[in-house]
Image 1 (cartoon, one colour):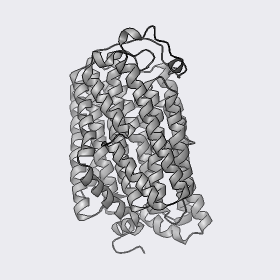
Image 2 (cartoon, helix red, strand yellow):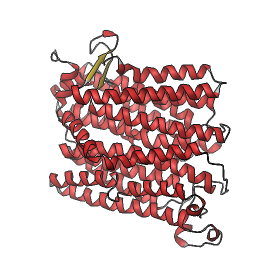
Image 3 (cartoon, rainbow, N blue to C red):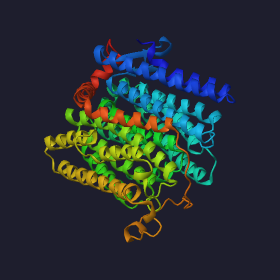
Image 4 (spheres, rainbow, N blue to C red):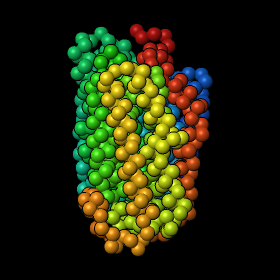
Length: 519
């Protein structure tokens, strides 16, 4: 079983190299990307079943024992993240194949897209299985390099500007992360997560606090946590639909995953509850207030992405078994639903010719099926029962109630308000883009709509395109997957609970890496 762990990183990297060789053979590149991600999805599913049954899998690369060598660790949490990420990457790949064929690969040039997409996948998987901070940093840098290329596909001015903003902010985050690793290494003499978790307890409390805050600041930028979330709404919406979907669904969750590891393994003695709750409060409200001011649907969803990161930070701040269980479930929910909604908006933009609700109308008549796909995703993200968004929020709110803290009650109120405002923002999109007749758009005047902010890079044109069945099929599959989170909520919550229990005590992680004890 140990042999499978490195494959989740090496298969996409090998696939990227082969796809690059066949740069002028689109069909071969598509086949390589599909096979690579399918293989990783199967391996991730096998690993999840194995670690859930037998416990954490640890691989010492090159047979070098930690802390001298690279260690890869797959526990329940990382196995869940691996499987969900692989499923999302595969689903979006299918969507992008349909779009590429329809547009003659203008938006996603095959020779560039597929190798870069696989490098992005390898970086994601590496970050999830990394057992040392420097290897996690390498995974982040692979993500950064690949995401910059994907963000600027097509070479338009808007995408180059967004790419520059994104890369500057990401480089700053990477420098913070690297500086934090240097500080931690200077203080503990190692970058192995399990060994840091043991040695950091011998440091003075103020030193622990400084190291923890430095690390969290770098991760907060990746996760788009307030006040370092300003870059996201201007960066994601300009990219092609498949790229935006992957970025929105997965990239911020790498930061959330790293924050969970920091809180539950590395710095368990540092009091983080109050500052994390304050950050969660502002992330929830600032994000959703930004969404309410948007006319462009992609920017609106980007702001809701920021706001819903606040729910995850809230669950981490609560720190209880129920809080972490609900957080893990909500992370899975948000990855799937947010990715699905961006794919649905990609379909809306092709059929309606625009992503602005000020010029969009008649979508319910033009494509009833796409309207249904969007409606289900909107209800789910808004937290309407019995969808997974509602179940995850209820779990988080219950954990806050059990904490019986005034700040937790404030967060519950902010979370409930954010959920209602999310639903309001998405239903406004439904009313204007789907329910409103097409012939009403031209002469429609509303002070509310006119006050909304358009995408500054939107030229105001209507550009309708053919929508292949493969794109609709991929989005439909993603919607069905999101509905499975409700159908199988019981088993999924149980799995999340087992992952939370394993993370509750950092010694579980340490004992898996050092079964004979830390010397």
